[in-house]
Image 1: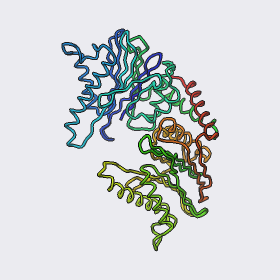
Image 2 (image 1 turned 180 degrees about the vertical axis):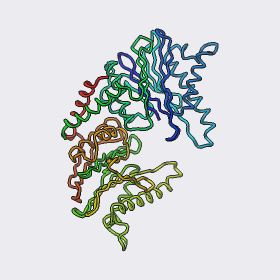
Image 3 (image 1 turned 90 degrees about the horizontal axis):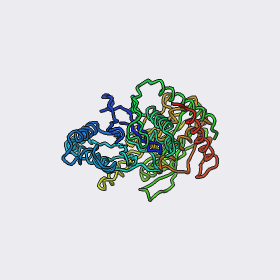
Image 4 (image 1 turned 60 degrees about the vertical axis):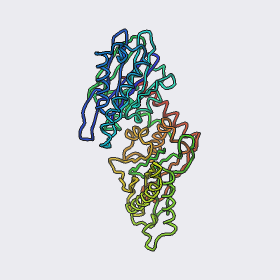
Length: 241
Length: 241
């Protein structure tokens, strides 16, 4: 499995993904699940992927190829799309086409391939937008009321987000929130694993201003995780029934 | 859906279940999911059920009928069983038989019925035991390393249990832990709902010494929930990245 989360706040967008993939329990690998598409100052987009690796890798490869070799009118290039809505449509169509091709071939084996994606981005002059794209290619968008979207193993890390994230959350607090959400998921589910990829797109900068890979044993992350455990246990001690 | 959780600690066992059932989103009802089988001082057993209501109700009805009308040798009565292991086997067999009968009838409709149960109990002279019984009728047991078992919507409420529950947790803290685990689940998932049923079996008492139904708007539960939210937000403010 996978855990990816995206926050859309007044101050910008914060994205976090893990890197663990597994085919069964004895075939565990590390793969990047966060992909950047940038022309700094003009447009910045981040795509995170969950699901069958063959589907997500092929989808990203096709999106990349369409940028390098756009059709005459550029209609398939997410770097030439006129809006984030158009980008979401291209990503959704590419994802669903790839999934259908692979499913056709695996149907006889009774295996089910599936995949979903989170797309975050802003074009110069446009709004910041954050989408969750389903395997069918359709999508939903984060709003003021629901400022975060998750894919993969989303349940363990949802309670902390439900409690602390609002559109007014600062970018610093938002990074803390997604990392604590990931920390809960890492502790409770083996199929999600370090290292992590963290990215921040500040409002109207149209670039991924901050990118960080957090490796296994990262001192800052470990300290935060330990402090959070202690704080939770202290809080637990203070609350009375 | 449902959320039920059972803790087996050195001091005793603590059980908590919600009461929401739904057939689709527009057919929501309240049903007890916690059932008591007691001969105080001799044996105390609690069964909690998750899954298709028709399966769990029929299973409990059959277990009850087998107590009232035992076979000549009493082999089907969980009140006459010689060990908790035998009780788990009877419950597992009854659950699986009921499920298979219902599945045979619903197969043509392409509907899938499923159900699982948590069984907690102690006979005089025996050990406290806590089992999770699968739809297939087989079961696993809580141990020193894994002192809690969950059925239904278990993921939202797992992180808090992972962090605070050990076999040395007191019965008072254990009640707090399961209620906070339920609180996170209630906040994040609509299919789990109040009122709640809470039960405590202290070690070697062989009776359900404490039973409480916690209704919607219960002042003590609301105060604990609010205090926990505040404590979490305070902790969040103090932890630094």
